[in-house]
Image (cartoon, rainbow, N blue to C red; front, top):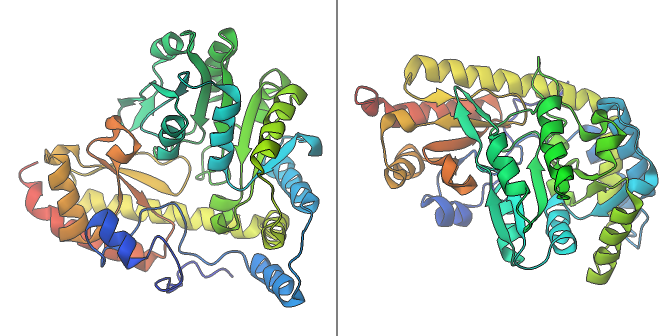
Length: 395
């Protein structure tokens, strides 16, 4: 029904992921096969395309209202995540990163610390630095093929009077990890104890691999969700990041008014009629498409894992519980970072996100985007295997 095996030509379509100049600037190889930035090489759900076509053909793109998109979003969250969201809790921003930057400005002062857990999505770090705040890093600790929280160090950072905000990535990008309810509560209880505001980025919360369960903040109960800002968006779930729509779910009226007032002061408003149409269609009709997508992504992951286990046994593949972004650990090859990047980007000709982009703890790791047709993934693996095979006997 859905053609995830179809290879869609994206060169020359303004795609940042496939742009030769971008690939040259970032990877030193304009011909590199791009499996890096977190967007998919799949067409969006057909209902989204059809509704956008109707809106375009209408021919008038005036000021528009987004309530129907918010209603579709709330219905989706209740249907998929078992959390009933009131419409007044939703504050829209043109993307989660915009929301994070503004939250940093609202809930901290210059010089304050913002707590994050690297290796993590790079805009967390850059949003803190760009707004004149300090990073309080609680590095996640590698144990086997997953990463764990150092709670003792977490509390040490949280109780520092300069720490005013904690930004959590759940599920985790780039590690593909799901936090348990107990882990979430323990982190949040520590933050509440020291009056640290919590923001949770759940942008990947719809893409959960079969056999795993994700706990959204709303499922923890009112004692938690009432005090937390939860960020959600359809961008990763339905491949519509370019529509620039997100929902900051803020149940507490005081926190919400403070945040909304700042958005008004900054002149940040949503008024793109195509965004509203696409988002509403995705949330209203996207269940079957997403369910089928997750099966395809899971198959891609296991295909990659089996190919690499057979051909490159020294290359470790971390457990993937959520997202379509998988971590490859090249540490056994004992290559320095510059040599590793040259080998992958220029010799193999594959564009992956270097782990150090996500923080120092990511050294030796790379993130691969599995949201591509099997033929694309197969070609990328062929290139990696050819480039790395000479190093196998040395590992």
